[in-house]
Length: 77
Image (cartoon, rainbow, N blue to C red):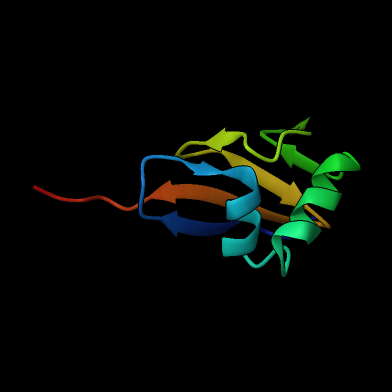
């Protein structure tokens, strides 16, 4: 398994299918849907079959031998 890449998202949460595209783990939403449906995507070590699963900061997504960590961009104050 490769070292985890930190992927910064701009909102408080992001759906799994969207995150897979943002993290360059898949090319299209259809690719994400297929991999998720086949049980080939893990979130925090558990197989995830819901494309709409909401990810939060710190969640670890694994797919096709790659890992990415969700990080929310600080809005400052």
